Image 1 (tube, one colour):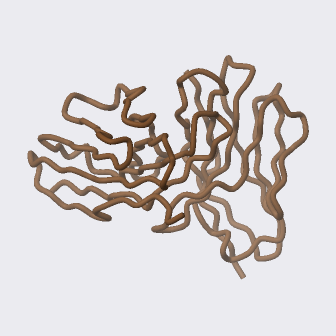
Image 2: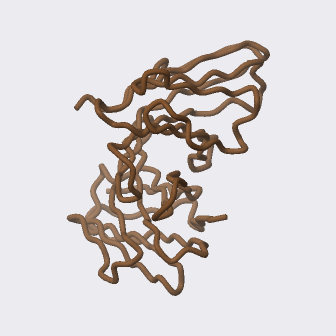
Amino acid sequence: DTGVSQNPRHKITKRGQNVTFRCDPISEHNRLYWYRQTLGQGPEFLTYFQNEAQLEKSRLLSDRFSAERPKGSFSTLEIQRTEQGDSAMYLCASSLREGADQPQHFGDGTRLSIL
Amino acid sequence: AQTVTQSQPEMSVQEAETVTLSCTYDTSESDYYLFWYKQPPSRQMILVIRQEAYKQQNATENRFSVNFQKAAKSFSLKISDSQLGDAAMYFCAYRKYTGTASKLTFGTGTRLQVTL
């Protein structure tokens, strides 16, 4: 069990550029979640997958954001035409299966800075 | 919509002492889970303790225990015998018990400092 892995750890980009983050969940975890955490705030839910199916998206996930989990393993989160307000820590979490009692295991996050 | 409120942005405790972090929440659901997560500086968030709303007994994990008051919608975390390694951001979180809404709803966090 190697834990949830996120890459890159840090991303600095100019406003208007596209960025893509990757998340590798714990092996055999079929649920994968994306959260966004801005400075001084708790994480806010963006979206989650059960296997390759995207089951819920927050209204925070504007049309510039897209997430995929093509084979039910790793996931990518892409932000197009980045804006200053996108600067945040993007957290990925996974859990073994459905069930509110199932703990979500978090990765270290990807910190995005928009210049 | 569910909301989670942590009214203490920062707390401080001396090593070996006890500290209590507060959390209140709002929900119309009767069944749900509550969690406390710890986020050390520049490190990943880890689960500290969880509580099922249908259980009256307060959860305990070693030095960590909760005081769950369902009617008051209060869920505080008590850390006993505080250690330097307990210094971190602590987030209270809520999760619906059933249905496909499997997300966690977090509070804004409490930064805990542990002093010698």
